[in-house]
Amino acid sequence: MRLFAKFFLCATFVISISLLISGYLLITLSHEGAINRETERALSQFQFDRFAVQANVIANAENLNENLRLSSELSGLTAFFDESGLLIYSALPPQADFSFLGEITDNTHVVQFQTLSGNTYIMVGGRIVQGDITLYFLTANDISTVIAQREYMAQSFITIYFFTLMFGMVITVFLSAFTFAPLKKMNKAAAKMAQGNYNERLRISSNDEIGELSESFNLMADAVEDKIYELSENARQKEDFVANFAHELKTPLTSVIGYADMIYQKPLPPEQIKNAAWYILNEGLRLEALSLKLMDLIVLNRPDFILEDMNADELFENISGSLKPMLETRDVSLHLNIQPARIRVEYDLFKTLMFNLIDNGVKAGCKRIDISGRQNKNRYAISVIDNGRGMPASELTKITEAFYTVDKSRSRRQHGAGIGLALAAKIVEIHGSTLSFNSAEGIGTDVKLDLAGSDDDD
Image (cartoon, rainbow, N blue to C red; front, side, top):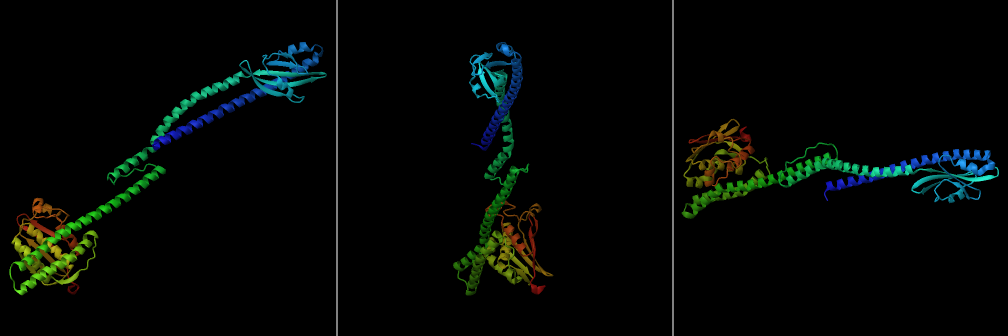
């Protein structure tokens, strides 16, 4: 059974019982009050009639029977009994029960209710003692109207009871609907949240328990949404890590495969074999370290990588040597114009940065890439220029967004996912710099960044 139905039935039951008790008490108390008033009136009338009878007995002691007939003209119905209890005169119906006269004493009177011939009477009996004459005197007053009034009140109450109960049920329906409306909204909001709409919230319109429950629901929804966002973010970061790591495997593996193929395909002088093996070993070790660093960078958002002082010319010579097999395969020439200087870099991440910038130029169809480096006070300016297809100016602000590609069909053909420059932007940020792009369609692209010099150069 739904809560609305339970509330409605309970409210109807309470209203019904309350009305019945109230009606019963009202009718009972009203009837008792009327009976008490009639009893007091009957006692007053009995005392008045008793004095009248006693006065007549004193005045007409010799003609007692005639006196009793005259006294029968008193208000109400009367009856007289002699000292032994034998009936002398009675104006009451013959089925009247006078057995209660035995309870009368000299100083007391007796009140009794009897129903005779469909009418209800209140009887008051007492003893009259005058000289040597003793009589039992009884008066009876018809109180049928009081009894009828009670029956009328009971019937009227039943009619009023049903109309009031129906009206109360209608009001209860509206009050129940008004009271449970926020709970229905809360139920709908919970259902929407179960379907994945975690930004669903309730409007708080009261300060009662329902309002407090709505506020608690909103707090719970905030916590659920935050948790879902956290889980989604963790999942996205892991996906980004897998995608970035897979992306970063391509260039080093191309170098490893290229140098391994060089050693395998033709005999080389020992010096060249040693040089090729060094590049294979160097790239293998870098990939091993890079996996952990990419985990820190992408999944853990770690910003505090240790930057080391390195010679700029030696670093770029190493980058050039690692890319040699891939560039030769694509028939791309790489030209370095690097001014010797000490720069602060994270070796594996910086190498990944340069691989991405060069790889983008290769994917843009360039045949020549120029990398220059110049000391500028305590900063070291680097420029990577290619003569590829270039990009429209409207795209330059978007190219560092994750998974964004200018030419989506070309990216698919070349197995690009648009994550290289997004990763590059993160790496440059770790080095305290930003990427600056200048490109023209059909001419090429120029990417600039600057790095901090070593402490020795400050």
